Length: 322
Ligand code: MTE
Image 1 (cartoon, rainbow, N blue to C red):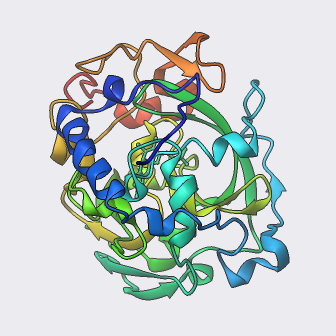
Image 2: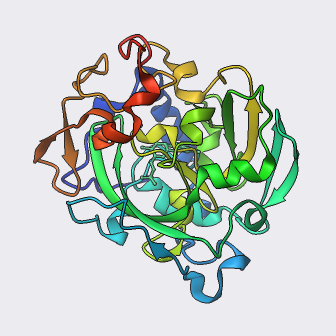
């Protein structure tokens, strides 16, 4: 039997999870007890072995960008890397830390296609300039009403996209993430349509706040946080931040993304943090700034980044385009 200890600040799984997923969890646990997860239980957290371009011990050299900081203190490395959503490894918050060490992140390539001038298959260091890494302290607000403050390391997403030369007709970017059943035990459960897909409007992706993340706290990104590269647009709910990206496709149509496909009335394509638009099953007006599970702090419009991004949505009905 798989026994998990739940930390005091974790929401019960049923409180935040759409019903189809909650039901699938039983199936997941059956799979786990059949020993399929047990084989992975001895694997370590793969921190620091993600990419050969980053130097010894997985340390990254990055320049702190003071423009992007947060008054509240960052969460600890331990916390950021042990309380995760990465359903390909399981549905509990500690499953990614437990099982993501299985994911082989080197070598890694990203297919770039669609409406780009330079389609092809790229290595991580062909897309990300490791000599221009920045550290940015961003808030992460999950749609489940918890939040963290994280010192990410990466480059502007715009700098990655510029390398592949979006064509004038491109309006959206679709991110597809890795799907390897032998390394990702959660894929056995069809909680979402795999592989996990996310997307942004091209102007959102090119916005200076959108970040292609390759590390945190001065280290190569741990697997459970989306190694070797993941996106973070801090004014959006965390699920917009696709982890472990293997394909970037530029398109003229809004891509079909994982969460809105699974539950269209609960999760929208835009997913801008908005305290005025409740999730159908809970309020978004407040959030738990982890690890303090009981302090409910007010959620800010666009997660506090409204001055920078509100103009992207001028004239749009944010209740309809949630
Ligand atoms: N990316 C993939 N491939 N699979 C996932 O399950 N979960 C999303 C997002 N990216 C997810 C994903 C959700 S719901 C959140 S809140 C963030 O990752 C969590 O990022 P973190 O674990 O680094 O805090």
